[in-house]
Image (cartoon, rainbow, N blue to C red; front, side):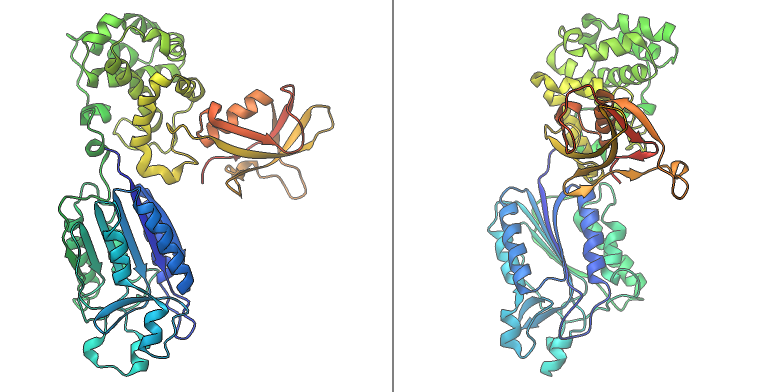
Amino acid sequence: MSRRLSALVIGNAAYETVAELKNPANDAEDVGQQLEASGFSVIQKTDCDHADMDRALRRFKRDLDKSDVGLFFFAGHGMQIDGENYLAAIDTDATDEVEAKHSSLSLNRVIDVMEKSKCSTSIIILDACRDNPFERAWRRAIQARGLAPVYAPKGTLIAFATSPGQTADDGRGRNGAYTQALLQHLATPDCSIETMFKRVRNSLSAATRGRQISWEHTSLAGEFYFNLSLGTRIDLYSEMALSDSLFVLDEAKATHRVIRGLKSLTWPRQNPAVADFTATVANRGTLDSLFVVGRNFYQAACGGSHAAQAYLSDFASRASGLKLEKRKAVLDGMLFEVFFDSNGQLRKSFKLRQFKELFALQRHKDLQPSFDFLAECLLPQAQQFYVVPGKRQEVAVDVVTKPSAKADHHIVVSLHCGGESILWLEDDDYLPEAGEPPMRQRVTLEAFEALVAEQMVVAPQLLKLNYQSFKKSGREQMNFPRGWTARKR
């Protein structure tokens, strides 16, 4: 179940002609991070002037035509003028209502852009119902305060921080009261969007002692979930296979006897279990059983079973007699085991001992469906990677070195990817004393490149290292600082 999700998140706090707000920049940052964790591609902007907001919306418009779901979030000042709603830029001209209209972003324009896009579901969330100083300057009637009700086109949900015509506080903590409640529930697994906003309303009401009641207008035709649990998103395998601690072995089944042997953690039992896994046995097994076989093949290989390591390295040939869907299930399980524990949860430390050998299989185009499966499993955690493992996307890294005293020996100074320095001290125990150089380990160029690929969790064949200080010959020795890593922070 692959979903294409795009979001535009704006938080305006540093207003030029009225008092600065405390929370909106934090609101945008925190909501943007949570949306990325839910699989959204996020355009995040803070303290935008009118031109910035216009450009961001145009960019968002282009993204929407390639998306299934679009989401627009705004935190800052909002106002209604002549029954229409406007979102204030930091340079909004508050001289009068006409100037304010033309120097703000019209909510109707946002709705129109999303309605006319190709995405099937549109979500608009507005934490923009604060007591507006622009309106006070115009001395308008109290009935015009807050934001006005709006029409939600088919497939659209519009959520307001408070009821129409009412106002909300900026908030006393890091976030506005509404955004704080939203962040409490946005990541709830398998919670429909309508149920999620009901929970937000309850939390907001409790936090404000009933003074602030959020409100939504919806014409959604289908269900949408911000956070689908793995078992809900991945429907190829059962919950018992994805969380294989629940998998019940049946000794009457040949594949289950293989699993039992692989789980033994002793080579004298693991190696024969590998030999017992013939094409005949595999082709009779269920997809769930073969997925768990794959998980345990990788576990045994990482544990030192030579037979399992040989099967993994030569998988394309060894599994050639398996039916395509059976072969895919085994490789799916191997890849899944690298990143997910026995409860189906993302590992805190990935199992990378056989990473290089396993991901070398991505060179075989007929095995790519398994890597696509892995990428779909990891998509909600995309922010934890330089590129989602399984994607056939090259990653370029610039390596800055300085020469050592010996010829062809180089000291690694820094690594750069995406315009940022990515080498950092992970283990403070290796921090040198003042004035002392860092401790280093000397490795071959090949080992250095494998180390960087493993730390970045990028398939070695997709990692392109550019050496700034020398022309690569392959004979180089690299001095890498101990305790430092290129792991994604």
